[in-house]
Image (cartoon, rainbow, N blue to C red; front, side):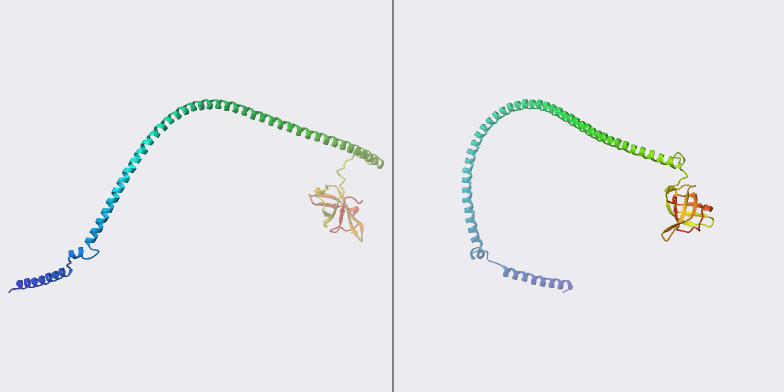
Length: 282
């Protein structure tokens, strides 16, 4: 036997074993279908009988529902006929209502037209009333303004009269005082028409610095009324008494201080810082 024959022999042996195993498996897994159907309480025969009973029950229910449906169909037909009758009656009533509504619409149209005319008249009257109110308010405002102006003018008139009386009285007092000053000046030989630019106002100050060249810086300036050419007195307070030191003539003026030149014939003692300065001795 050659190699090919041996291979075929082995394959036949293997296939024989495979078929034998398959036959054994089929034998061991084989069931008796008659036993399965009739032997057990839950077999196919019992299930078939149960399904037949359910089918019969469903048929009975179907026949009952069919009869009930026929009865309900008859009732629905009767209701439909009744509704058709009611529909006809409602349509008749509807047509009547439409006719009434048409008449009402015509009356409403006329009423609306009349209302529009009345509204236009009312608007015109309201506009006229608003204009009258505006005119009245404007007239009241004008009246109030005139009244306020009248009151203000009356107050100003009274104030003017009071001011005039006060000025008249002041003028009389000043006139008497001028007459008295004139009389006193004439008695003392003073010319009241003489120029007064060279007469300094009554001022008091201090010496800020005394220079070796005879110039003295004082704390009075043009803001105090001091002018170039004015004269001032320098004195010193010692033990409660004022002792004259010198007399100066202003040669330079600034707003807050001035420079004066000592008049030699009126120099009584050396000038020192913080000495007092006055434009008048009394």
